[in-house]
Length: 386
View 1 (spheres, rainbow, N blue to C red):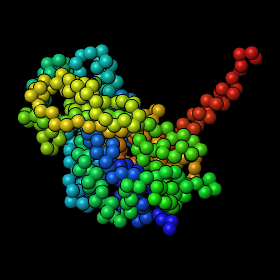
View 2: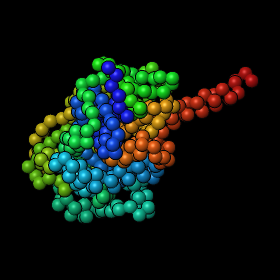
View 3: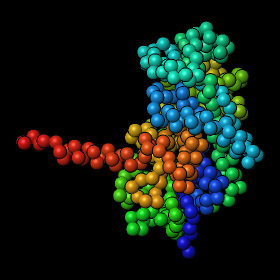
View 4: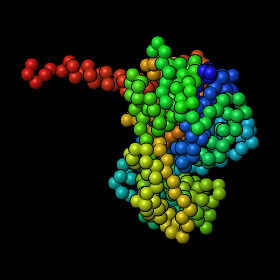
């Protein structure tokens, strides 16, 4: 029997689950398809950073999108907790971005300070102020720091637990342990997916499959998403928890409610190999000790790896593609947790008939258009024997 839905979402990570919750809350019949278990890939492997200011070196559409999502987070998290009774660990901790006085640090600081001119909250702290900020726990190598007080954190594992419960409460249909094999195309339009347990039909399909977004190689265009491995080390210290996220160019340190500290994260193009490596553990631990020397007394708790969905230009794929009925909410790279609220709202608006002109910079069509432009230039350029 063919199974139908208004919207079929392929991928049960934080993006797919957030969208399923939003659509189901609007009365849309949703089916969520996940090859494993909900949120068990990059979403639970992340560190839960909500820090667009500390990460963004220039203004632009992506920064605006990330800032909008961070600003949505407090209300979104409160609504999730009220709906499910599950805490998500949202906390406006702030981010302290530290400099060792090296040329690369100076360049980064200069690139981040555009935000002050734009009226965004950012404080530049000298050595004495840094000492006061963290009560002398930072390395004496730290020369100065930028503090972003509006940046926040969330416990991504708790967040996924709440999203799973919210989807259940709102009545979305969830199919786990079921693999999407290909999209069902009829007369050039997408009308569902073929799975390893039979076909699923839907009025619209959203590819939110993370690093696996390019699972259907038979599409008339390539889906430019590839896995990018990130490794994280978890430490347990007897010291008081850090009051905020602390970063250098080599590492970020994220305090967790259970007293652990996350040190992350690598960026590795290693295909679908998800193993933890000794080299990464050593590098992250060394960078953490350089930044906060007292962590030499911390105990090693564990380490893990996840596969982020990367794109050639580092921007997500959001919206419709050249195949009618097929939409993308993929390629969020290191920002899936951060961008979940705004992605859910914008895609739900789009799927229920609203116009979303702000999605144009993230259109999946941009790569095909770029390729077509390149081909046209190649065909029109004079040959060497002309």
